[in-house]
Amino acid sequence: MSAHEQIEELRRRMATSIIGQEAVIERLVIGLLANGNLLVEGFPGLAKTRAIKSLAKNLEPEFSRIQFTPDLLPSDVTGTEVLYQTDQGNEFRFEPGPIVHFPYPETDLIRVF
Image (cartoon, rainbow, N blue to C red; front, side):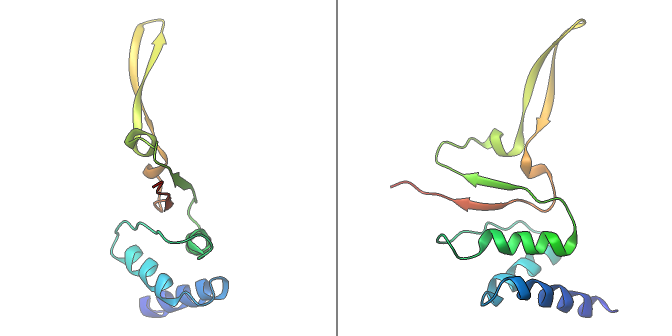
C-alpha cells in the first residue's frame, strides 16, 4: 500500500467517527504529516476531542488531554524542576508535563471574559 493510500485510509477511518468535519480531519492529517503542532479550538460540542481521539486510535499512540484554563501555568504543560531530598542531599529533577508525549494533546482554550 502506497503512502498516499495509507493517508486516504486514515482519513476514511477518521471520517467514520467524525461526521461532517472533513476540514478538521484534513487539517489534523496535514499537521501530522508536517510534524507540526496544532491548537484545536472551537465551541463546545464540535467534536474536537473526538477528532483527536480518532486520530490517536488509528495511529495507536498514547492519548492525553490538557484542559486549558485561565490559571494554567506554562510549567503545568511542559514540566518543571522538582526538589527531592535524598540521603546525599537535595537534588532537582525534571518532571515532564503532558506535552512531552506524542501526539500533542488536544487542547481546549477556555476564555473567561
